[in-house]
Length: 350
Ligand SMILES: NC(=O)c1ccc[n+]([C@@H]2O[C@H](COP(=O)([O-])OP(=O)(O)OC[C@H]3O[C@@H](n4cnc5c(N)ncnc54)[C@H](OP(=O)(O)O)[C@@H]3O)[C@@H](O)[C@H]2O)c1
Image (tube, rainbow, N blue to C red):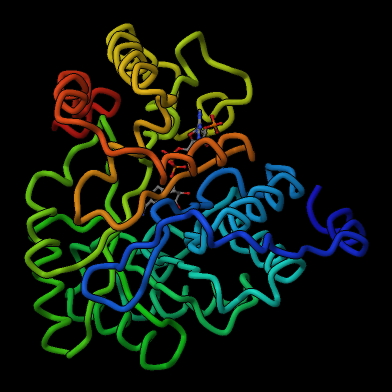
């Protein structure tokens, strides 16, 4: 599907970015850094593996950039298979974005299971730096803009993982560093270590949506006190905070096409809350997906909302949320009883 067809096709279809691309997207400074990020950014976890049509991937990335999305988020393991999202994005960069690299913020991460053996996951210096080198090769880049520790490693000294991130910076392989999936206490520990090393943390990447509200439980305070920016992932709860499943489970949906979600999440209780949220969204002239993004952006500590999209139409709808009016106190109060933590992930309440 990918490669030959795409390469042949590319010959006659060179891309010139929309000259109006910076006219509407708002950009917000990430914490106390100098870096501005778009209010809505695009993630390539799903929808960019070898299981998806390359030309659709390419169209989504082009459209995002044309609408002012400067930030594209990846990780070593995105696919499937793991690594293929970086490879496909690297191909899109090569074909379409060679002239635009300096207008793009590209991130990658290391932390989850990537290759066999004891050095293929978690937070050792060995794994983190080898993984970054692999990512750069797949992406076809000399450096990433942001490099993350993808998850805390309980069995590696935090100093070692932070030290590997700092080496990534010092060696020019990354311009900034970030943490993902670290809780408030782990973030505080990591910040102390980085401060000792004299290196600022740019950004935190936690999950945040109507049905996963852990961010509100201490981490927001740590971010505010330390003036660290954040980019919240899965703001649409992988599609559950949209109207995607209100009338059944579509064949082309993440529930049907991946193993990240299964039918059981679309319970009667879920549907009751999702329908109520959908009504609130429609009353304020948004789709549920758009209101979900707007809701994540209501905290000043949240710099950007990191959406996924399986089509250009979904992306377009989500980007419109960057321009939406903030939720009123009445709307927030109406949403509150339906933004039920752990509604679709029972493990969150364990
Ligand atoms: N740091 C981490 O540990 C971590 C973990 C997960 C994700 N992330 C990052 O966050 C990014 C986003 O995660 P995510 O894909 O779970 O995000 P999401 O925005 O919560 O969900 C995206 C999915 O929602 C559906 N959707 C999107 N826009 C829609 C719309 N307007 N109307 C209806 N349905 C819509 C699509 O599902 P269908 O495919 O069914 O069409 C799409 O694939 C990832 O790509 C990755 O960069 C990071």
